[in-house]
Image 1 (cartoon, rainbow, N blue to C red):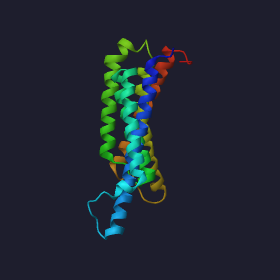
Image 2: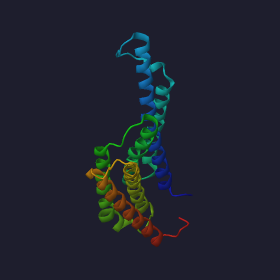
Image 3: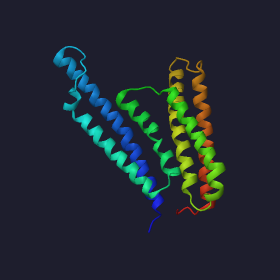
Length: 206
């Protein structure tokens, strides 16, 4: 019988994806509803036209399913694993929002996620892993997942800065782009150390 904590982690990941995707889908439904209100009434009224839009209903259904996954995940895995994985919806929401809503990466949200990741990793390194790290690889892998989310967001922003700079608009006059580069490098180093530690302690088949 498989370790139930693996089931909890999978459910938590599915919950993060479903919830973040639901926010984007609901936003699309609200936007279309507003456009319908303008078309029908000629002004931006505070109505409920979004209730006629299938995107809004789909988003609400996805959110409900995501919350159900998240609730179920807590029955299979401890909160110390499930709760941090829930923060991955910041990553998936950012990626989906960039492509479907044409949103730009919010520096404040990115910094908040980085602070949360740093606190979580420090807690795991000094409080959890010394006592339980040799028993289960999930603790190291969860840190790798959290820092991996930071590295993806930071690399995306840093890559865009390089692309615009090559195109002729120097983006490295802004300190935020140096910050993205530092966060990307630091998170990748932590991620590799976590995975190397997991592979050192446990067999590859796990």
